[in-house]
Image (cartoon, rainbow, N blue to C red; front, side):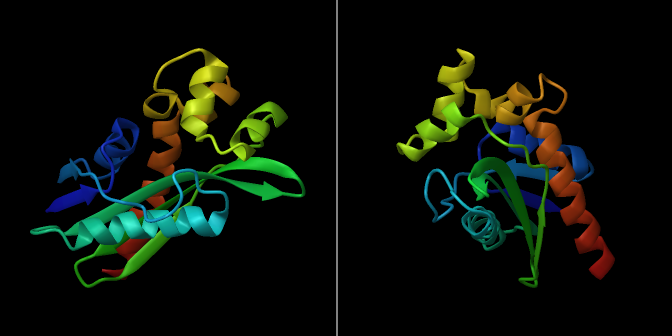
Amino acid sequence: MKIYVGSQNPTKIDSVKRVFSEYEVIGMDVESKVAAQPFSDDETLEGAINRARECAFFDKCDLGIGLEGGVMEIEGDLYLCNWGALVDSKENVYTASGARIPLPDEIKADLEKGKELGEVMDEFANKNDVRKNEGAIGIFTNGSIQREEMFTHVVKLLRGQWEFEQ
């Protein structure tokens, strides 16, 4: 079975490889068709579904998976959010979300100026490619949860739903 992941980000691809280790997993560049920095649960979910659908219709694909990170507001506080979508060859769509933690006000201020979280996190942590490594979740949990682990949890939820329907 071939599974396409709608990203070239190693944290996303590796999370799918962990959960679907017995299958061939291939990352590919696809458009999320949402803002580069999704600013709501709805927009982040839409991006994940769009990525999964783009992959699912690719030649010889059995499953398409889209993983999208974003931020969402609750009572004035900005939270990390993440969504995943799995689309099978019958065009069934399965969705799941994962961990959420609040972001510091200084991060919120930069995001509201139009910057992407990955860029803000690189500056904040004085690192390169935080989004391809520990992610904001890794920085703000002092390494207790890494971005790949967060997405692995979402992919497990997707696989479980898909298998239940088989």
